[in-house]
Amino acid sequence: MKVAIPLTGTRGDVQPAVALGLELRRRGHEVSVGAPPNLVDFAARTGLTAVTCGPDVQQLYSSEEGQQALAAGSSFRLMQLVGKQMAEYAEQMNREVIGVCEGADVLVSTLLTEDRVASVAEAMEVPMVTLHGFPGRKNSAYPFPGALPPHWRPPAAVNRATWALAENLRRVVFMRYLNHLRKELGLPRSAASPAAVLARNNVPEVQIYDRALVPGLAEEWGERRPLVGFLSLERFAREAIGELAADHGEVVAWIEAGEPPVYFGFGSMPIRDTHVVLDIVDEVSHKLGRRALVSAGWSDLVAADAETGPHIKVVGPIAHDIVFPLCAAAVHHGGIGTTFESLRAGLPTLVCSVSFDQPMWGGQVERLGVGAHLSFRELDRDRLEAGVRTLLEPATIQRVKVLAAELQSSSDATAHTADIIEAAAG
Image 1 (cartoon, helix red, strand yellow):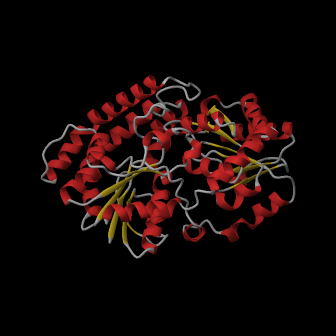
Image 2: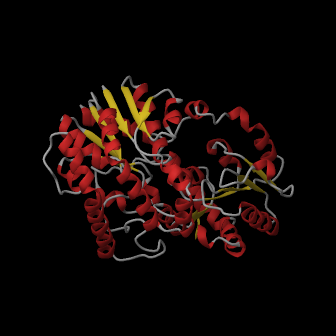
Image 3: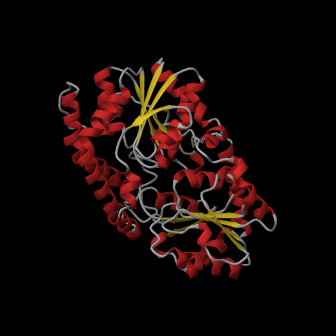
């Protein structure tokens, strides 16, 4: 069986699909992945066949305009930027998605590609399955991510209303380029939303995050939207992309030479003055009497140039599966991959969110009592200190241990998702 997986977005969007592709290949299937130009090598180094699909979103985020939108914490501004980029790239991406899917027996999409893939599947008369990395459909339990403050607990009717608005907005914004694609495929025009099209065709919408993080959702959605858990990249694949266990000897030795540190990793956050942020981490860590492990890579911070005391170690990118189990707590941006890794390792987690689904996951961490949430644009010494103090409370530590056990029990998520795809193609 030939499986095509057209992708776009950032590494957080691509990595789970690569993990799935490797499982499908292990089962003897032929797998073709489409990835943004900056992530084609990432997918190919794991051994999968990978070609370019979609624009370089990371380049957009790194631009002056993108960094300003990130710094403002505005999902609306970011959506405008991404929408503009996608509009300029629309015709080319149509061709790239068609190319990735050519000759496939089953198509696998994500929230970011399912609208195009649904039309291609219709034209090719083949089944499809879509992967959702956060709640992406109307429900009563949670509002559309970013629509309301994450600490709010609105009634079911309000939650459903935010989804109705968001789904209609998505339908209107992307209808034009989708109908260009449908014309190219020889299909009639359509005004239906992706959600309506997939529901009509009974397409499985696999939720690749754990039900323990979103209580009540699995019961409402039922079998067509199974919550399987996060699709983790296995160690052999991490080694292939350069996250070598052998390269972590120095940092592991530093961790084991004292009490477990608090991990700080802000990914690609828009830090205009990195040394000011590092000073905040340094001061808070010293005040709390805790060591800190800081993963550089954000903005212009270079580990070799960082000036800190002996209680702080600044390193480059690290393998979460190696380092997290050795830490006491974690502070990061709140992408679902990093959030899952930190909680599964039993780390109380402070989410410093920027936009999109990050505030939602931060809100869930806080709601479940396994950490705290702080908007990154509000980050200062007092708020960071208060957040880390919450992480180190015995009650928080105990609750996250219980949650970690639940998350570890979903270690078959990738295999379960592969089963669903094989059944859909069967």
